[in-house]
Length: 139
Image 1 (tube, helix red, strand yellow):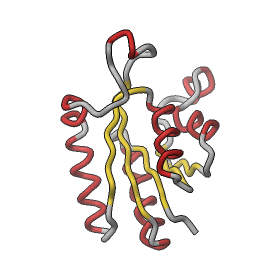
Image 2: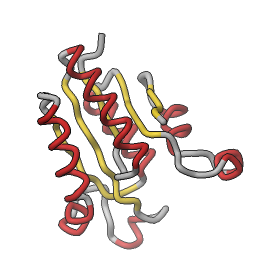
Image 3: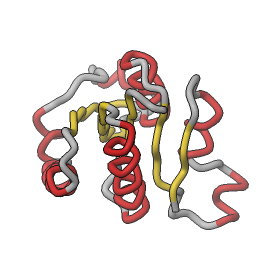
């Protein structure tokens, strides 16, 4: 059913629950699985001369997440393509999904309170709103 899946992982428990499900789906559908981790930058990164490109500092912050994700993928016999970006998480996840022509995005549910989600909205909700493909939100 799915040919290319993008999983967004911030290192939280919810994100790793989502990765486990993404691995199962990728394996059963023989789909290509990509994982992205985004280091959040300010609202106006161009003023700080920051771009959406990967930096050495960003990569180091996500090393543990990447190692854990690769180990899970290997245990499930699924090849995992990883991406580490610096920028705006929602915008960059949706853009990467579009660039990769993903037909599914798998994200973990927010760890925030219900009040926070109602007032500000979760990233998962924002990805769901902006993505051009189905989004699976996993608790």
